[in-house]
Image 1: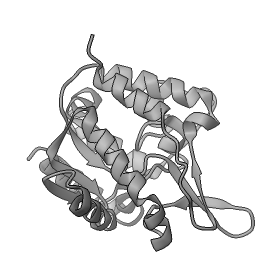
Image 2: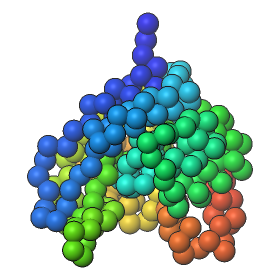
Image 3: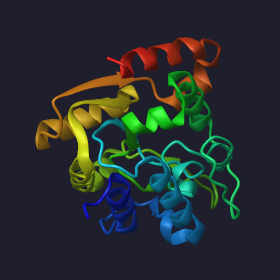
Length: 229
């Protein structure tokens, strides 16, 4: 019996392990090692929405946040929306993540979670959470492109990760990249590795929620127009 998209994604996530070096002050967090329930809810999510072999379009984020996929194992999905919209409860954690708010509001207008996840797959070129040391002993979210040395350290891992995503059964004729700065770096990876043919850039959900919340509906409309092209 052939493996479904769900089987392939779950296998990819279970095998995640970053063994490369990192510049001083940065750390990688693997949610699947930190919390056994993360593995359970991630598997429940993909079995629920990806239990088929239908080709999907790829929406490419940056890297998971500590409060979104860094807890649930599901990109742009905090525990609130995992339970209230996707119907999967998480007992050991409770998170609210601003990017998740925008994404699920957009998904509702697109036609709901079943239609959306039937057509799209979301993940990141660096699929584990990155944190950097801030004041004192605090660790805060970091993006893979925050430091040139960090990008150089993780670049080959990201190319390999993206290749594995496309091998899951994703459409590489056109991808959707979240965030303009992210797009600049993804283009560099694509020039080197020839991963996809065309791309469309959308404003990152976090940017919209933090800085453009009054114009949120305009961005939801823009997403839906672009994703339907």
